[in-house]
Structures are given as structure tokens and as C-alpha cells.
Image (spheres, rainbow, N blue to C red):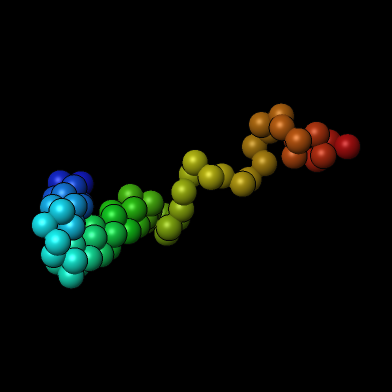
Amino acid sequence: MMILIFAAMTAALAAAALGLRRLGAAALLAGLVLSAGLFLFEIHSREDGFAMPWLSTRGEGTGGAAGRDAVA
């Protein structure tokens, strides 16, 4: 999938260099759509739906400011 994204972005750059603005814009749009699709594919989980575990907001005792507020 990343190869397709890279190819679309390379095609957009090449088309822009050759002065083919519409083709370049279409390739750029295709690259952005493929990137969004890849992102959604990566964060989808059958158990949780769409979740990003690296952005966990549940207080798990990290000891940060939220942890101090919860104790006080």
C-alpha cells in the first residue's frame, strides 16, 4: 500500500514538473485518499472499532499531572 502512495506522490511531482497541473492534482488527490485509507486500516480493531492505543486517555497511573489530581 505504501508503494502505491509513493507512486501517486511521485507521479504528482513529475506531472507538476512537466506542467500537467490537472494530472498532478489528480495524482496528489489519489495519494491523499490512499494515505487516509491506509491510516484507517492501521487503526481499525475488531474488538475496539477505530482506536488509537498510543493516545490512551484512561488514567493508568502514569504519575503525571492527572495522577496527582486524582490522588488529591
